[in-house]
Length: 217
Image 1 (tube, rainbow, N blue to C red):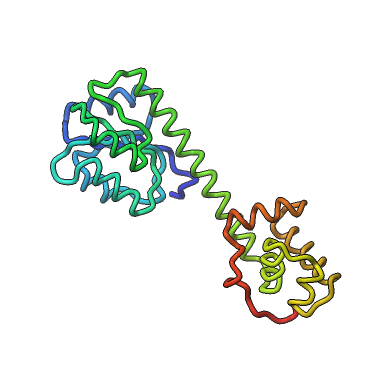
Image 2 (spheres, one colour):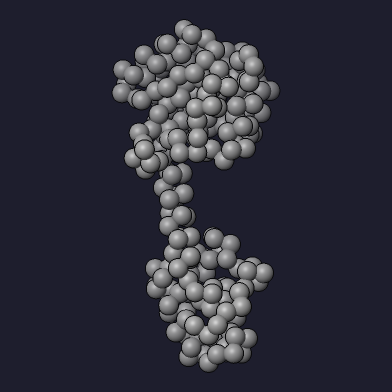
């Protein structure tokens, strides 16, 4: 199933059977899809970059603990929001988790209303992240449609060159530069030069090292 079609899941990772069972029951009654895991190793073996939802992650577990799981997710580029669960009032580790990018930290026993609010916010964050990732993929696909010469013109425009300067550097006429700019803006679906520059900066398309030698097409 594709990431776009997958239903968001609340992943519950806790070595305490009672905690997993109670959270699974509670969230199921609230119509969340859930998957539970008794340890970090099991969870990491099941997760991948296409997974959607959020993670309720116990801070202290035998074997791979919560902070280690969080670090491994980051290393794999998996951006699921992580809500750390702790029964220990461990301020130092909670701070470390937040510093490492945890979405929130909840103390056990967990207040039901707070849990629900936190999960809703975490799922909303994940949805926003997915939309942004899809948008950037679409933009890069549009950029991939540019010819080598159009790449050159785009990068020179973003680097602040005027039409006449670009024409001299590429050995073409200023009018031809305008034609290439129009083609670039059409392919990237922008109407104004500031939008084109913003998009190129966002995708880091301004490096002179990326300028390509190309035929006059």
